[in-house]
Length: 139
Image 1: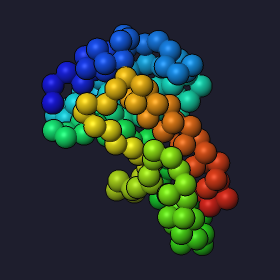
Image 2 (image 1 turned 45 degrees about the vertical axis):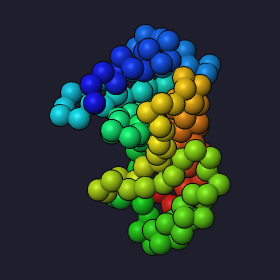
Image 3 (image 1 turned 45 degrees about the horizontal axis):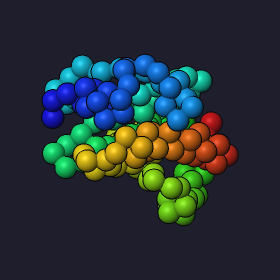
């Protein structure tokens, strides 16, 4: 799993900063045992996307909110709404990692530059839409 940033630069034909589907972006490697690239879109810095890969796929994850940010009386209703929305959110799915709610998407390691760019920008758009749609359930 070496060289995810280099692969992105090669596949997307761009350096670690630039414009992607009309959005200014920055790729930031995150130190650790597992290679992770943080993708930050200008004007959406609070919702970075974390990109990693396994032997068979690339995974794009955006953290939305934490459990403590949910209005406790509305938690069950929020979870049902998220399940109902899951199918209608293109290229993305809701999930949870520990106490943090996420929206994520997966791609083949052989994905084209267009597919990677589309997944990253659509996931960013879907994260904004999810927060807007769930705002009545959050503090």
